[in-house]
Structures are given as structure tokens and as C-alpha cells.
Image (tube, rainbow, N blue to C red):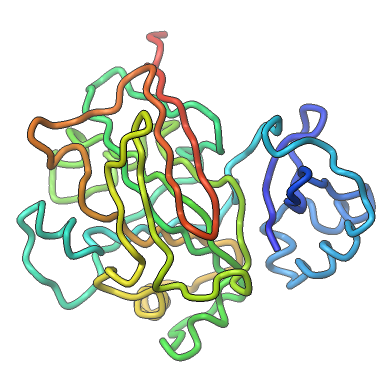
Length: 285
């Protein structure tokens, strides 16, 4: 199953993704599950899908106005330096534990929404990432049980303002400029992914491949990351974990490549879909 968050008649909605279009919830079902996160928390995705079985599409896949997949997560946890080639291109040594930082929900944008290069600096970089959406929460989740806590997968563009990321050893300022976190276009449930390790994560800038790697190249696996994060915080339904980016980021190239107004950045994850965001410059107030 595939689910997306989008607008219908200018109002936030969500629903099922079909080849023919997006199907929003009827009034009764929407009252029970107003957001995708609420349905995940209630373990109601199958119920929602069944209720939409005979309903016509509300909007085509191409014409929909998408919202960030989970617009109101309790937390967004991001894994830094989680692919060997990305670690090496930055000159970082091996570590025993995942590098974790946080994003805020208000920095997110949906599929086809513009990613904003801020006024302060031109150093806006791309980072293609596989996003994990948590189903049932918990503390101290074991690696063996971790996949039982996954609602699905999506695409994430961890748009990074490098100058601010590198002001100190703390990444958070460079990872939370408004309009820099692309998330979508939809969530694919785990049953649709036959071999997670074989899934490829790719970034294209103006059609040119910048990053490409299989999930198998992760340093810390998805179960390891879930287990680690759940030791220091309680994971809850709808939490998002962005699992890290492969090598090839713009800041580590020679010459460096920064995203600029007029560019189009696409995150293509096999078996899931393509997240597309045009780049615009922030306007001075």
C-alpha cells in the first residue's frame, strides 16, 4: 500500500495512492483519522485502504498538491555519516555508534514544493536519504524486533546549509533552515519492498546523477539505528528517521556544487518513488 498527504479543495488531507490518482478519505473516516500519523498510531492503514477500495480518485498523481508526508511528527531523527563513501569523502574516521541529529517539522516541504536557498549563504547542498516512518513506538527496541516498528518508507532530501552546519560541531543549525527538508511523495508499506538491502538511493540535480548507492552500503543498519535511538528516547507512531546519505554531496566535490535558483533536485529511491523539489531563492522581507 501507498499513502500520501496532500490537499483537496485547498484543505489538508491524506489518502491512498493508486496508479490512476490519489484517493482521499470520506468525511466519516477523516473524522476518525484526520492525519496519516493518526492512522498509523491506530494501526488503521488496512482499514482505511479497504474503505477507499471503490472510491474514485480525487486528483491525479501529477496534479496533486503534496504536503510533507508526516507534517506533525513528534520527532525527526537524522543519521549522519551513515554510508562508507560519504564518511570517507569528508575525512571522518570510523565510529562505534550512529551520529544522530534532529530536524524540526516546520523545516519540511512536500513533493514538488520549492526548496528555499536562504538569504544568509549560497551553500545549500543535497542529501538523498531513505526515510523510515515508525509504526508502534517503544523504548529499548531490540534489533531483532525493529522491523515490527516500521510503518513504511519514503524519500527524504536532507537539504543542508553547509556554512551553518559547520559553524560548530553541532549540525542542527544547518539542517533546519525553513523550506529545506523535502519529504515524500508518499509512504510505501514494508510488504511492497522485497529486498531492502537492494533498494538504491539516488540524487539527481538537473537530471545529472550526483549520488547513488544501495541501502546495503549503510554503516549502521536500519534495525541498529532504531535500536540505538530507542535507548535514549521513546519512539512513537509517526516519528521519522532519515537514515543517512551516500557519497557525492556537493560540498565534497571539486569544484563544489551548490543548489541554486532554477535547479531541480530529485531523490529517486527504487521501489518507492521520486521526490522532486525545484530550488528558489528566499526573498528579502
